[in-house]
Image 1: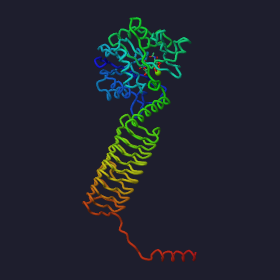
Image 2: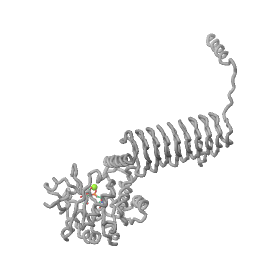
Image 3: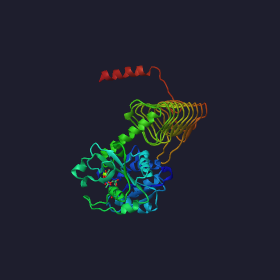
Image 4: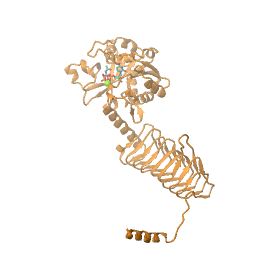
Length: 452
Ligand code: UD1
Ligand code: MG
């Protein structure tokens, strides 16, 4: 079984991605908040592959950096000239020469392939096949290599579009590009590939005929077309995003999250939900968000790098930025922004407020329009608000500053000094009243107007 077999995965990421029309290399474009390369490396890890080689284009330190960030033990190789997929695989010749049971080849611009599918390719080798190719039935096969079968349905060759006869072009069963090869003979087979074809390239796909000529079985593993979607331009990038989001939503709902309009909720692969979370329409979850049991995320909220405690309530129109940590039963209401701040159990920040670099104690109540003034143009400072404190509406808390537990701050205050526990601080102009002033003002002004 595959558990005892060792595998090397070669991820081809040397493509130029011309059709992306981008300064960013294609494989670093993101799907569901994560680079396409990261998705592929994630699937490879899921499939229990212990050695990874990534083939990058010349000078692509950024691609190399992303590969090493995600798989620190990966080896990277540079393909200087782009002479075809087999040539790209051979750039990692040294890694192949180490010798492992399974050699897997993946494309970094095919980001939706699952770990289970990679395992299925490995299983085919474990069952004796010399090579396994991932196939799919294409709605429109144009441009893909076709999987050619004999009468018994066995894979005999892969024919590229440009080299195919009319009869071969009629075949709808296509090559997704992913392959598993017997790791002990792969190097020998790959070395025999020539470039006498329509494109003058070294086609990895030729390895099927070579393996069969040496008496080994070639197998087809079938995948769904959505899983093997290759991204060449930004329309396909958006299609991949749609497929990825659909998967994430289904997984969240299967785990007990209610979404009123799932097609309007955007998730990241690392979004974590408890049970019975309710998400209203039009909510965006960026990377690093965890939401506890029974929390409600109201419409039009945006969360990133934030944790929401059980039973907490967020939005509508709330923004939780990195470091926002809401304890259980906390409430963040409309037009409220929270950044790098802890809200204690049951604390309420209900309207029109900015809380940044702060600690808000349990059951504190932050009035409408409160602002923590956390930045002086050079440094950030912390605001500490004790449990059960009450901050009157439209107050500015100029950090560093501390409002003690149970203290009150009068509405409209600009608080620059610490407030003692259970005290009242009022820091605003004192109200004066002149009796009858308005009435006499009106009489005088009216008289002036008549004179004119
Ligand atoms: C390839 C397959 C084709 C399959 C299709 C699926 C071959 C010969 N053909 O064709 O059967 O249906 O994928 O999408 O394998 N790359 C390099 N260096 C190179 C050439 C390619 O790194 O010199 C990388 C590309 O960046 C890409 C992948 O390999 O990630 C596939 O290359 P591409 O040129 O897109 O191959 P296709 O012609 O689409
Ligand atoms: Mg392609």
